[in-house]
Image 1 (cartoon, rainbow, N blue to C red):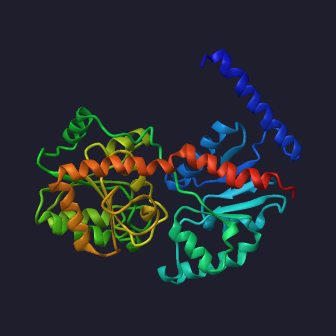
Image 2 (image 1 turned 60 degrees about the horizontal axis):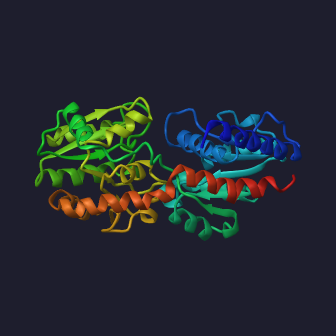
Image 3 (image 1 turned 180 degrees about the vertical axis):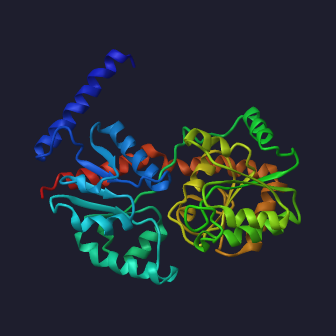
Length: 371
């Protein structure tokens, strides 16, 4: 379509958004949906940013992200985590429609999490909608007494146009950059799994770094393993790999394009968490043709059909992780089929789908209601 034909469509959509805002009594300069994100450069920030961008492609001027929840005085206020909601929700104007994500957490995770969940459930009557990214979490919320009508099951998204399968040249270049030998099996782990934002020498056990190391130790006894790490607070895993004498590299991606390139040298991605909301790395791997072995937590059971688009194992089942990882390394034909099926399966979480679902299932119905 020519630019001259596109401009009137854009102007028409913008004018329509302005009429909606005017009809709701909102300022024409302030999008009616505010998504509260965190300043830290990690999942909550990108979830909010990409959800807003995707929705605004369909309905320009509908949503914006903010790290200043006190600025939200009307329209829809959506929080990127239930922790943010509990901290700020009670202080905001009752003119707002309140929405929050609930990505993960259960009382069994510890007394602090249990107290948080009790506080969340006490706040639940003030919420118009709760977004769960995974069926496990949706079912958990319902078992605690949250009405099914109040829950929207919408996945965390993935940039399928950025996390693309690498060409042969890109793969070779990425492996050469990290000094990876041709015969080595490269296993990726890009999740923050240490407590705090320093070295991360104390493990965040909910993320399963101990399980990861146990699996890598057994794999290294049978395969020439190279581990590629990214993300902050990886000290516990790094020390473990050094103790085991396993070759590895740890790097930081300065931006999303650089992160996408980190998947290029991988033969396999291991996700060994005991609890998850996503994680985004599983979807990024699937989108980029990296086979995934994942525990049955977070979004993995929703996206992965075991043996078809990846492999699922029970939490802490080290032997099952090792068995499936060896299957990837020793059966290239099966691994190739997994790669193709995985990218097809993860398309339900493309940001364009996620943005449309927030727009149609949450924001438009709430904005149609007057406070």
